[in-house]
Image (cartoon, rainbow, N blue to C red):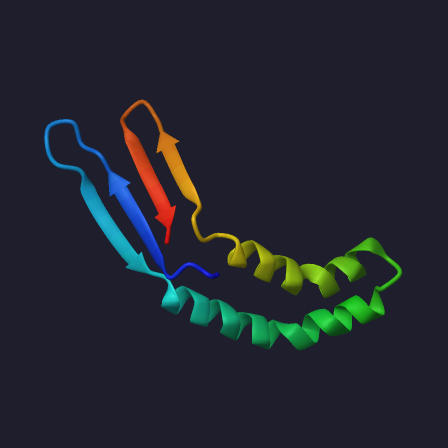
Length: 91
């Protein structure tokens, strides 16, 4: 399932943690629009260069990208540096 929300948590030492929730619906709509526009060009490029490795990559890039986006749901990312931590969660 494609995630619909990105939750960001930034803990602060002296205060309550900062929470930010971003809707990803607009990002997905923009990405789908870009993919629809680029699809004929990638298919043409892939068919012209099928016997080279990058021709096959151009054909299979859309299913690979969709598979990566489909499996983002439930991903938790913890980023830590010397100043603090940030938690990202795709819901």
